[in-house]
Length: 387
Image (cartoon, rainbow, N blue to C red; front, top):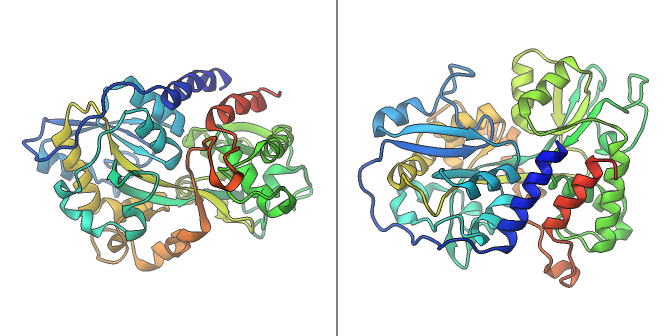
């Protein structure tokens, strides 16, 4: 895993500090589909019924448009940045910790929202979100959003854990056994923000106001906490399906996770549940963003319209345990989701989630003395390596 992170760190540095290629101008009109669209996506985000026949929002799109959907899954935001830098893709479902890097690195083109009829239905809280809107220009179409949850084994925890301390500090769990070797952490530098979020609540003297804006002292405290966590962690996870296997077969009982894993495991009868502890949670708001050098722009725009106007958001909201970028998908019967389901997924908790974003050196909350993301990358490699 360390070698993977080292490869990613080179890509992160390149995308953060180099301006590569020319930013393509936004399209002004659409033509016939090119026959395919190539998408980098989070696992579980683009389903054609192969995992579960009930969840398929690809087949009808292909039949209606003639655009064959090709998907490359990426397990971390840094992998997404690396793949988009390599090229050959039309779209990416980027989270906030990747989107601004891709915009700054000239990997994306501005979206013409006039070419997406259902843009009017997008959640007003997302239309101008800072992770895809720069100087009034939109670089993507809102997709899904939600919190990073604490997944736990319900046979070990008869009641939901109330704090993230179960994965950060050594302790005896309710079953009388230590948590050492039985917890996991996310295999991505953005996990530094989870440590900072924990410290915001449990060490207020540090003065952290945002887990993505850390001065050197706050950053050191977060790294120190992660080094202590390193002694507890059985595996740093980035593959959702491997994490599910670890909870099923390898004795893992608590970890930060996504609702996707929780839903799949529960559907299989696994003794797991999830919670957002008292400290709150980081989260993700993902955006479908278009490569500057897209070879299939017409199909790409057709796909973005499809995400907003079809059953996709409703059914994906059920499948992933997330919230749709179009609120009406919770209630208009286009798919499986209901108003109650969206409430359960946190539709009303938008303001409580600390959404992923890319840490930069100049940030107002710390008088422009924040530790930038490239440091997060290199230092997190050290943490995982035991340094």
